[in-house]
Image (cartoon, rainbow, N blue to C red; front, side):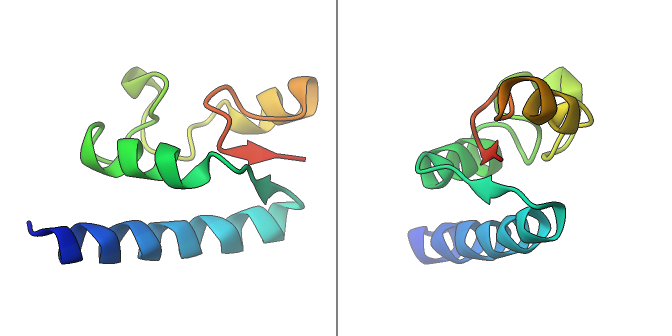
Length: 78
């Protein structure tokens, strides 16, 4: 995959996550671009803080946002 394809994938995934966050009443953090890049390119779409959690957004993110105001990997915040 060349750099343009990587950038297009990252932008598409970020847009999907923005729509998801908006629907849930969340926001993406200022770290979102870095986290999305790691998620897609180093973790193959899995949770960037713990790949055993499954695909991003992981199943634990809602509880973490409720408890801490943001998810563990700091992608989403209230």
